[in-house]
Image (cartoon, rainbow, N blue to C red; front, side):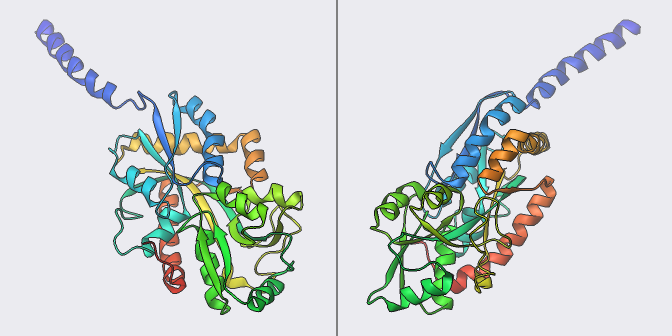
Length: 322
């Protein structure tokens, strides 16, 4: 009887071993998809987190840039990927909270198509101009735009970016003649902006600060509630008298809907630990990112609220993705 029992236990253990092994994640490299071109805030943050995530998860983390179509190309790729945890998204406001309301048919649901796992932080945008523009304040910028004989071109990091929507809100709310010029990321936009071909942009604060410090560009106002340590001399849109232009770009890590709980728990823990490291926290602060720790459930609730809050603003802007 004892021998028979031992045999049954051995057989049961043998059957359980493959299942236990299959649940051990990760077993191979992980892709982290960035929905903008290299050089933007999402790309910078992804590459900042990459070494720490590799260390915590024990597998290579490969950052891949998939820009285009209001950043929906990269997000759609993640939404279609197997829900096994090996394809992650550096999620942000554009593909999650904005683009759904600029398209007649979206290839994914911004809430239901993803498991929103870990919140990283938020970074504001900045109204920035070439030094040749005779405007140093928001009212002066409005006055300069109205004085032009033809529509003023304004740039952003891409169709469907926060810069695009805030620019359209600015145009519509104050009756301005402006024309949006979308770029595939901030880096190519800066080529024109620094050269003076483009005179005005609404863009993520992070990548504009070095140019502002060197007086190559002029920061007019940031779209955050409070002034940032990154650009303490630049007023907020509220201080400038334009409170309806408040807008921040959130950054997080998401995955295809249906990923195992093990993936959610491990990624959330790894992101929180990496972001809390003093060197990473300092670098995020230098980038103008205000970090905050959230559980996966809290991040999901946050995304759900973001989607609901941005919908009317995007629709009112009239901006469309063709």
